[in-house]
Length: 182
Image (cartoon, rainbow, N blue to C red; front, top):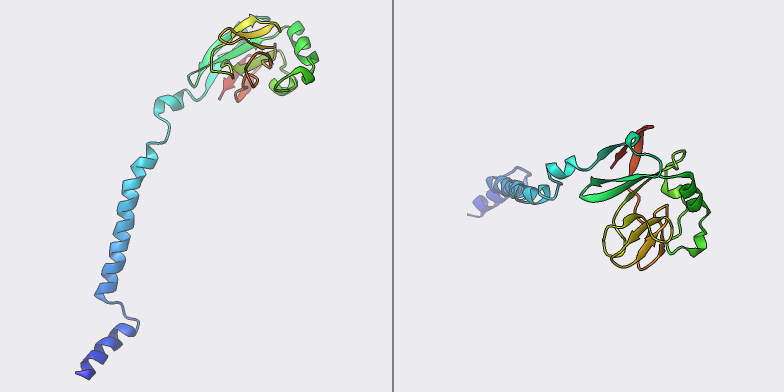
């Protein structure tokens, strides 16, 4: 009997795969595939829906906005203010002292180079998410009547409880009369 047990041991120890080894590897492989098939729908559902992707960018025709006027467009469910600023508004924004601002930012950092007459910003107050009113307030900009925040003609917070300037979304000029937001 000693010869038969050592013969069986030699066959397994000689590097040849046994049926048990195959079943072990196949079980692990099938378990990994099953785990992946179970987890994939959970990961995939975190991707944005098709209707959200469709709203991820919007194009705005600037040719219909006269100097001194602004429009509000919707982008990703938020209002975006697009303003064609006057020379007076641009001058006020450029000359505003940064030392008096809660969230200091130059006017040049809030507009595209060579296109300073166009101001594009998310129209949501940074205090509690209200929508400020345009061409109102103490600084010829926006005023949030909910809690009294005043933004200047560059959308920078100048007075009131809002902690930050109005956000500037990602946008680019497609031509002199068209921008793409998002």
